[in-house]
Length: 113
Image 1: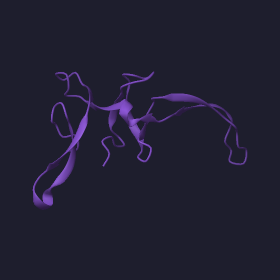
Image 2: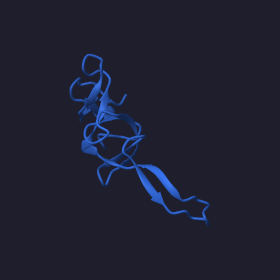
Image 3: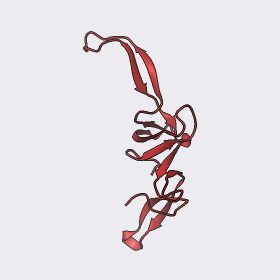
């Protein structure tokens, strides 16, 4: 179970996009990286492929960020102002109904409903 999942809203903590928010579109589990929508855009010079009907040129592409450089957005942090937060795990329930959930470390609020 990863601390950051697809669809989570995250904040970039370091780099040229520091402070920007976006939704996670993909998690690269083996590499420990995430791709965030509209963040870390780079220009790629791509050669065209006439057999597949793909045009060549300069395209903008989202590149991955390291998991340590993003924080999960917590709207309840800083007196409702919101901000990035650390995530931990805990177990809820007893016996067969016991399940592992993510929670915000600063507010002790469960992330997964």
